[in-house]
Image (cartoon, rainbow, N blue to C red; front, side, top):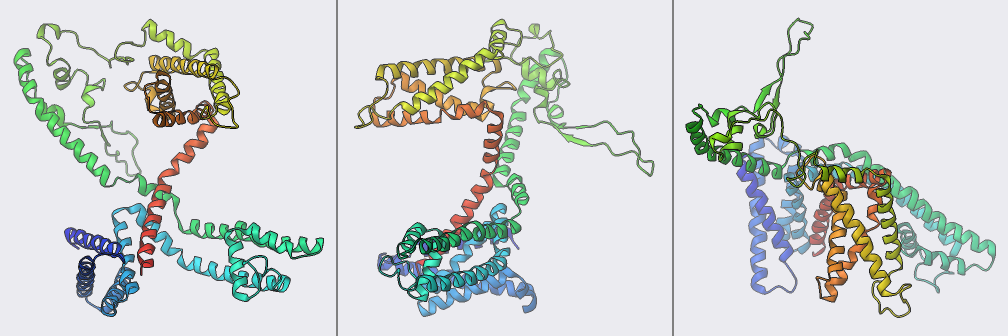
Length: 521
């Protein structure tokens, strides 16, 4: 149960997997001998590890109750048998042990458990599909017999070839070729109709029913809510960020002691930075509602930001806040103490009542400003469709001359630049509550606009790189989605599904690696 021993076992699993992946048929003799010794040492280690597990369990019954022990015994027996018999396949079966590394990623581990729990249901579904496929194959043999043998390899001349043809239609691989071949061997319209009905019917049944049955089985065992909770649960990266944050807090507190002493000497006030930084929690007011026993509920502790004294209105005049804001200002200028939060300033210059900022806020609120932006987006998309990617494509001359298209692109870039500058001046870039770059849709807009600036300024002389820069014009239609609430909801919902899909891809990569290693044998 020692944590470091478990990590050591994981390292041995990684080394064993690397050795199996490096065992190529064209590897030097010395390297293959080294890999063989890795096989022997790793398999002996895992055999000893299982002996320790058996000793710790105390009895064979308790040892055999664990599914992990059953799995490890299978891998150990296969690996040792492969080493003694020099069977490459048996030596590579322990690559299944790589799935144990998913223990460090709870989401992947949950996916693995869901997949394992689905095995019995999927097996029953495969049996059902196999029976249906055999019936379809026999039906096809009675309908077509050996008439399709000369026109295509996908025929029903024998039972095994017919079964392979049925499986081909099931997977949808060139099923239309089988369709046309089955229709070509019939001489009448009714025969062609029934031949097409047979092929299309089996394809539709397999694509709409069979595959959806697989999806239903997977959904039944795959808990999406649990997966999302595992993704949201803090992991190793969150622990690293929290450790870094705590370390910085300690460094920050230590670095302020000298400033506290100098400020206390000037002002004559007694200040203790440890007391100012230590109280990170506040006590909520005691609820007056009594429970059934007449006892008042306990006060609740609420966590606060470690640097709340820099921004909170209640803490704005605390000792440490005064020190941090005015530590380098002479005592004579420390007279005025603000009683509220400082107002937000755009670009650190323009406050809420600044006439320049109010002008841009007024412009952003006008309907005609949005209409101009919409027309510019629509026009840029239209020009994007009629503009060829290059001017020298044979058979695809540009509809408009090059100068007209260049002037139109410059006009659209100018309008988008005015919109960008207006949004920045009204809402701020980053350090305000409604900052422009805090919305990822605005970030997409800025990426498109940035490359438009690069293209207009002709900063890149290399034709290949310039072609890649112009490729970002294809993102312009995304600006329309930004201004449609319903489309944004669809895209945002799609983006929220990306983390689970990412973990599914990682799970698939693990599976591909394991089957690739076994396939090498």
